[in-house]
Structures are given as structure tokens and as C-alpha cells.
Length: 198
Ligand SMILES: CC(C)(COP(=O)(O)OP(=O)(O)OC[C@H]1O[C@@H](n2cnc3c(N)ncnc32)[C@H](O)[C@@H]1OP(=O)(O)O)[C@@H](O)C(=O)NCCC(=O)NCCS
Image (cartoon, rainbow, N blue to C red; front, side, top):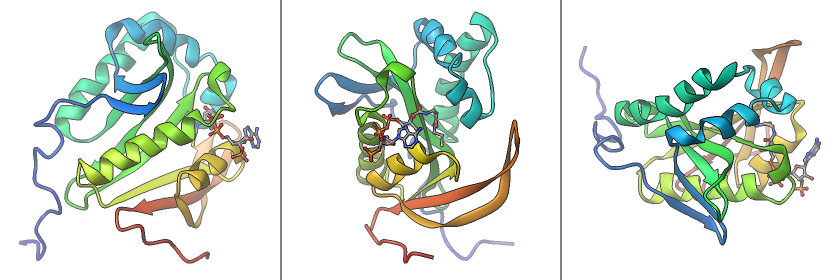
């Protein structure tokens, strides 16, 4: 059955280009992950809050290396993108990226975490802003969605400050270690159109 609309973005829109380095603010940059970031990723996943909200842990250096290595293939496959948020010494302090990329709909879901020492300084908000700008102005995406547990107040602040308006609550849609969580659905559109408060 032929589709009645063409894909919003053609295949190759992401994967045919090198994953870019993106400026965030002085002393902070987004760059693709490298093998030698594995130790930093392993330490980051020791954080109980990262384990809690991303619902996974990371056991040892081999898993950490597999984690950093997966992103090049997912970029080429145009299904996901992840950037290391690095400080002025090129050390990772967090992650920001796109999941569930759908070129046909020019849409994706955003994801982020920071190591504990980097929190509370607006870094997640600014890193998300950098990915959002690139997604809309360079990658041609149309809609970015963001979901977080309604119990994750810090993530809700990041979403709101980065211009992702709330579209609703997805009731008991994601299982966490302590059971089902309601999720806030936020989104931002390339057009700048803002959702009406549900
Ligand atoms: C969510 C997270 C990325 C926020 O990073 P951050 O750089 O500290 O965020 P910012 O400094 O931009 O802003 C955080 C806001 O949340 C608030 N906040 C921080 N911790 C909070 C908490 N435990 N409860 C309520 N609010 C909190 C801050 O006061 C700030 O509010 P403000 O905008 O009114 O000043 C970081 O806490 C984190 O990595 N958490 C664990 C992983 C995670 O939750 N990932 C997101 C999954 S959806």
C-alpha cells in the first residue's frame, strides 16, 4: 500500500554526514563519544539518580566500552544520536542526544544526564538547547519530544527551561525499579508553535 505522503526527510539526511561537534557555551562542547570515554561513562552510571531515571546500570569496563561504541552505528543507521557533553579539558560531564529518530516524520525523542558534580549550573538546559538548535536548523527535524517521570522534578525544570512545553501525562507508561510511573510528555516544534496547557 503506497503512502500518500513522502518521507519528511530523505534517507541519508543524518547518516551521510559526520556527526558534528556543537558549541554549548564557553568551556562546554558536544562531541561524539570515543572509546577512551568508557571509564567516565562507567563512573557516571554509578550515580543512583542516573540508574533510577534511565532504568539501567552498567557493569564494568567492557559494558562501558560497548556503550560508547554503539553510537557510531546508530548514527549511521539514523536511529539515534548521542553526544558527550565535555568540559574545557575535553572530559565528559554528561550525555545529551536523540533517540527514536524517525526521518519519515522528522521527529525524535531527547535524552540527557549529567554526572553529579556538573549539576545545578544549567548545563543540561544549555546542552539540550544546543542539540535542539542543531536538530531544527541543520538536521531538518520538525518535532522533538521529551518524556520524564512525573517524579523527576529536575528533569521537568530542564524541559521547561529549554522550551519544551507540556502536552500531557502518559499514565503508567514506563516501568521503573519501583513500579509503573506516569510520564510527562513535553515537546518542542521547529515552528515554535506552543502547546495549549492540557
Ligand atoms: C536532570 C538533570 C540532567 C538536570 O541537570 P542540571 O544541569 O542540574 O539541570 P539545571 O541546572 O539546568 O536545572 C535543574 C533545575 O532543576 C532543579 N532541581 C535540581 N534537582 C532537583 C530536585 N532533586 N528536585 C527538584 N528540583 C531540582 C534545579 O533547582 C533547577 O531548577 P531552576 O530551573 O528553577 O533553577 C540531572 O539532575 C541528572 O542528570 N539527573 C539524573 C538523570 C536524569 O534524571 N536524566 C533525565 C531523565 S528524563
